[in-house]
Length: 101
Image 1: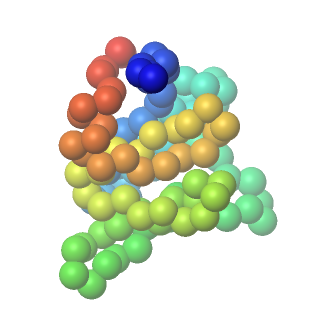
Image 2: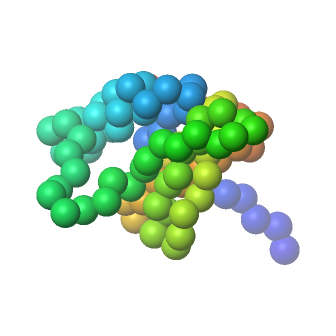
């Protein structure tokens, strides 16, 4: 059998290694979806946090709903249809996604 991946529009951004840029991108995505900026409810852990990896510099830790995944600078962070973010390596993202807006 042969298959084709269904077309899908997704929100996302490329991680450049800086926390202010991550928060700015999350805010823009939230604004597009909900009409309000990105908010974390009191007592809840944010879905994305930034840490410093000793060898590779800054990394994002992303709660994918199935566990924690890591994004390094250059990776893309995409919001899936279930409302969870997940990392996508740059080469995979560029081979499977195209800019729509």
